[in-house]
Length: 229
Image 1 (tube, one colour):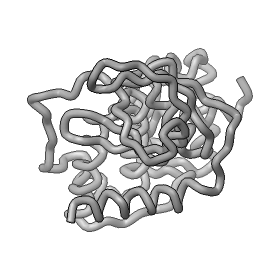
Image 2 (tube, rainbow, N blue to C red):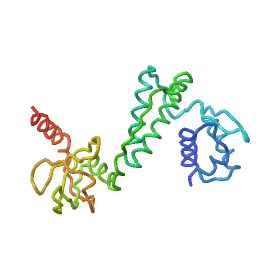
Image 3 (tube, rainbow, N blue to C red):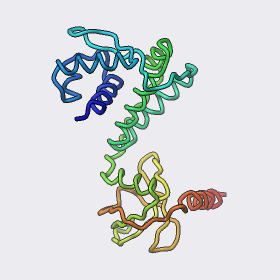
Image 4 (cartoon, helix red, strand yellow):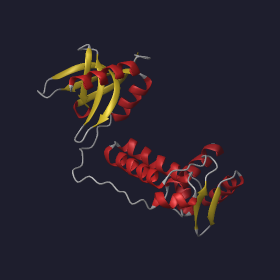
């Protein structure tokens, strides 16, 4: 592994792991020996990272040179912590992990006083009725929407009828009990809401619908809004 990549992984580990973090844990996370880890800690310190601690005591990242300082009000901190925690509960594993990493990066940019407010936030979220686990193709849905590429899939409707579809995914909506994909259906030549749990054999294609996603999504949302009037 290149030294720059190794240092980046070490900095990321210091951001997200409960602190102080032992040298043994950091070495395991970054895949190096403890001797190499000590050299890497020294390299990060020389680069401007303020890392408290020493061998046998554990390490704490108190100032991160890679991230600009941020300032939030106490209520904004509570909103961030609560919102990211909700993503951790509602999202698929990849999205939940991203929320955890995002929170760690945000907290690392805060002044000490505001960091303590974030770490000891009073707002919490919990779901007694958990949504069923999300299917593994959530990542494919996001990638297709980001890249504005069509998806081929098998879809089972409420009457248990199975059809082959090609869709242009426009967005993903997390509802109370299910997750839906807002899309333009090439088979029906119209907008549709597909329940992601009823999708199967989802495959990313080379067909691009760029740059139509944003205007199509705007039209679809307007259509949904007008239908409820």
